[in-house]
Length: 138
Image 1: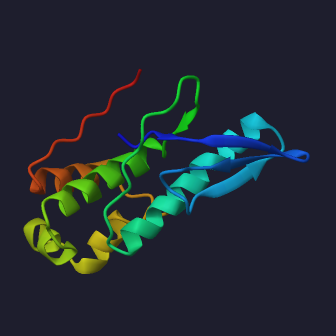
Image 2: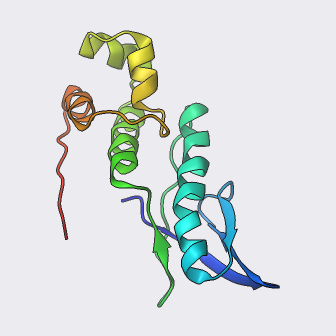
């Protein structure tokens, strides 16, 4: 769902990483492996700008043949999924807080991609939006 294609561009002695779908996410690495590892943090940071601004998340485009993709960590994907469900339904954070019986700072932390929320909190929030959280190891 949040698997975004990356463009890897050799730049002198580094590799530049950009995301067409999330132009705010830019990083580099000494080689392709390091650049892709750094891309996870850059993507999470770029997507956090959308959450902070309460804007819809950009849709990940279809990667070209052989194009690499990057997705946020599992916890961040769960948070983004709840945020996406909330925005798709036109629900504001205050309404989600009311449904959950939480204070606003608790909801704010739920959508803070740098905060290590507990998975059960994310699951409860998803349920309050009529969604379910599934974890799968592939």
